[in-house]
Image 1 (cartoon, each protein chain N blue to C red):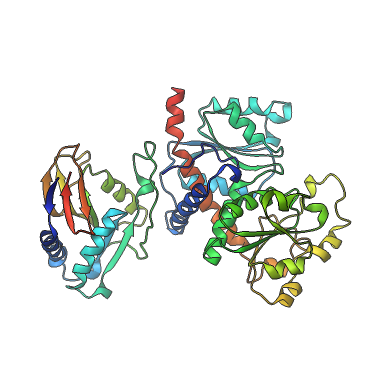
Image 2: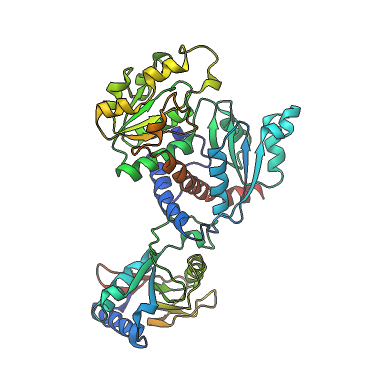
Length: 315
Length: 169
């Protein structure tokens, strides 16, 4: 029983067996997290460094808790308080950290492909992508899938991704994962935020009318407007975006169907998602966060299976 | 291949163990039965159905424990975890761990480790179907044992619940 990959760089590289294995392992870790003693000793000989070159609340805390629950030693690194601000390169920074005998690297970077670059330079470390630019955020897609299964019983559902499909790494990872696991996927949002060839490239439906899209779906994953990644004007104002593509209670009431509402966080309340929907009955946003720890424990646990091979290669 | 227990013997062994497990207990409410995943549970399920014929089922607490995350060979080989299902407290109880084959003792060591995370039992006892004597790597011995056998490392004990027998290969 092992994953087919040494790193978790993206859902793109995973097989459907890998995904099933991660999700089933996460179920067992979720049980561990319900106990009074929420720790297991599986990773007590492993050191993990959390390299965050970009801001993060949920993902960083979630990874750190997951590592601690597995008894791993953790080191936290954020670019703003490090020698990166003195001009050290990515490779130098990581090489210096690895020379202190670190086994796994959890990494977030604003450049797409940064973890892929590192994995080529450092073949003897396990690298986990915690979000790279506009490319992938694999653990988020895994925890979304886990949450959908937990709520709906299976992944054979109609899943809608609403919002900034163009800049969202959560969208891309979710599309890869859901298609691999046999879900039906639709994307919705303003045409300027939906890549032109998305339906051809990924075999997903595109619907520019949010009401029609919501009528179709069982699960709506509402994505954040990634203002920090948009370097041109793609819609006229946040208020106008909210009027056309914000998920609102009145709209959901009008459709009158039970739709599971998800959001990867952080929520721009009143932009892509209104407060009464985010905090409403159909919302599983906080369960997503809770499941994130179990899913990340599963990823760390499964990738740690290769550590010994890497260590012996080194010796 | 050698048959260690055939269908009839297996049935008698199960009944004997069931009687032994409860013979000294005036009140079974103080006992907690825990099968070790995955193969120990197949044995404990059968054992419990024998015990249920002797004592009312409602009075008995029975759970399943997965020890995958506590194994000491985790860096050699990764195992797929199974479900842990202990929805009661073991605090101050007499815990009876149940596994099918006791060999090196390392699984039971991991189980003792795992139990600690659920509370502090009054005592822990071990019940196994087959004890492979003289092959222990840690100081662990069974309190209740179906059958003790002498084996060498290259041999393998297989408990088949479909065909209801125990065989030595």
